[in-house]
Length: 341
Image (cartoon, rainbow, N blue to C red):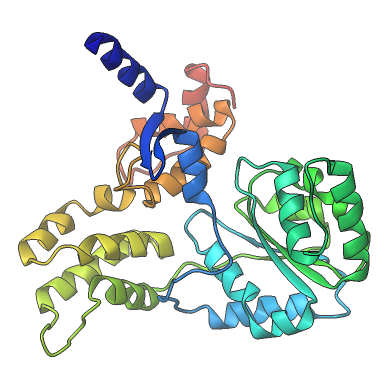
């Protein structure tokens, strides 16, 4: 019996099924479900370290509340970790937005979603008096939402949309040219263009070194220069050097700051300083320690690539770090390896 139990546990682990202890006993949760949970975003967050967002928020709010705008859709696009969701959250909770629209809805779309989930989330927020019952069909919800959006001035935030065809699945609820507006975030600029060819696309800039340092300092030195704690000058100088490796990516700066906040000695800081690249990129497995690491964010982008592009990308591992690569030569190498381009 012991051998059989051990085999079942190994099989569960190989299939990405974890055992989770709940209040009512033991239940299982697949790796995919856990990843989806961790990817879910909310309209309210306890994030307090915000730098350099004021002008961007003002600009986006202006486009959304403009009455004569021909665009129904405003998008925030950029690579993973650049701060799209953080910016969208600030816009969503802006006082001018709350006053201008009759209703505002936040929906986390992400990679795995169902149309019914998105529609039900929007309907519950915009029309709470409408009771969704077991016998309520998808057609019923679509019809009700269409009516609501014909009469209401609503803002709907669709956070973390990945594919252009995802919009096609959601769009039947939107009447043409009414008071509704959509703010969406995506790594794919084509998503917004599919939704509205005249959309306004906003691309956040990377952080400057000064902005990176402000964020890093607040996270890595939370008790900065209090009576009982003073920042070690050598640690501060190492921090300034390390943030240069973050490339102005907010998530990378926060991951690094969070990592160093838990290290209290100069020796520990030096160890991380000497291995900075591997610490920023994170591990190679999905677990509690690196669940929010830059590695996981970038890994999602890699997983979204078509298979042939994954092969092309992985081939780059043949080249040394910071090695200049000739595009023409690379295309010949790919062809020689039988990798389609």
